[in-house]
Length: 71
Image 1 (cartoon, rainbow, N blue to C red):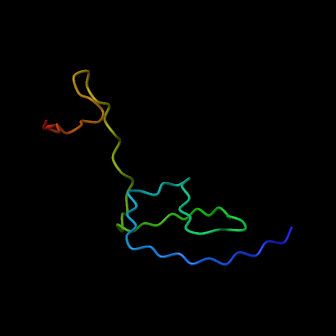
Image 2 (cartoon, rainbow, N blue to C red):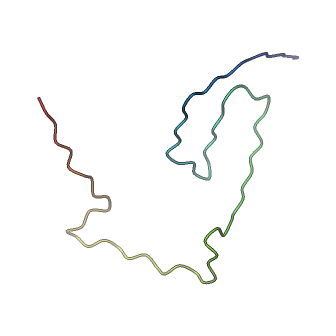
């Protein structure tokens, strides 16, 4: 199948919170998306990170901020 697409895309503001290893951010159309994986040491680290500690029973893994709602 042969498909020709002509498009114009105007983006005034694009906010991306996060892109993880398996995410795809696509603007417009694509005939095929090829996967790629790159690892960069942007912090210049020379040693492995220290082991993570398990949270205690009273600690929540993610603490959510209190948001006051007004009527």
